Length: 252
Picture (cartoon, rainbow, N blue to C red):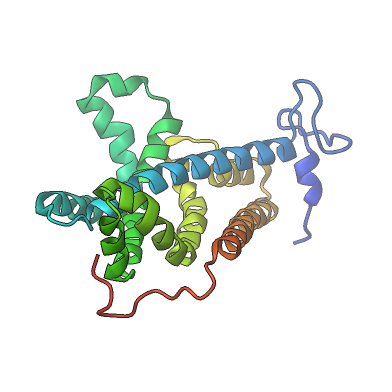
């Protein structure tokens, strides 16, 4: 079957081919719709990534706090809870179950609920990476912070976390790329992102091959951009001569 890439230049209502492939005024082509869906995917992914980094870092730190067994257990419970429930189930819980149990949540837009579900799901994985990064550091770094009079929040802020984040940039890169791919489940609650676009437009136009190929290319571009940004951050933040402690030398 021959490819028909002009499908993207068609008006979504009339089906007529639009010159230049971009609609004018209220006219919308399938190409306009494609880029709009890409924007939704990027918005959901980046917002959820911010939530995941903030919450994941907090939980990761909590799991390494000295002399705080109950906080450590709380952090462990958080990781096990969000890591072991499938993402799609979590999205349904946030979208259908929690608003029924907490009526004010019925006023939350679906975008917020999906971001929370995706962000908290990813936060469990990032928390594990932060914990591993902290425990890979030599014990002497903690003692050095204590020796100069830092409080626990201060030596985490100024000594431990800056070095731990440098160690975990590679796995954080993978999680950042994964969050773009995982955002595809947002179609289940009618977020107009790329996957929902592909399903709906592929059916409307009877051209699923062209539609899914275009959507695949945009997912690949998104992942590659994230990869290059994180590689740049890793290169700029590298500390010459720094090597994480081996097994047995850490222990934070």
